[in-house]
Length: 146
Image (cartoon, rainbow, N blue to C red; front, side, top):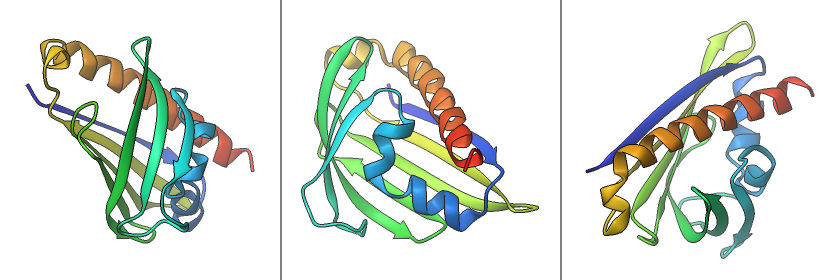
């Protein structure tokens, strides 16, 4: 069973500011509750081909994975995908003008769990939705407090 989770929020900051912050993976541990660290495997800044090693916690487990940036439209869209471990996952950020200096930010994770993870895909998607919703609330608080 595939996992496809999409959440969004509106942040009372301009698109350029939101995209610059959220689109820099170095900031991920600040606004993702479950991400402990991000290490650049290629030199910053973010660009197509950038590779980043993440250490995270999810459902009580420590996981390590490497993302590669596969698409970047500055100020509009960033797409990263894992190297397949622990299972293939694709993360997409999208930003658009929501009027009055506000930004609509969309966060989407899609993937195809394998093995044991595939058995719990439905529960995993629900847990992801909850975590992603909290993460977007956190980035909104961070950026709106500036």
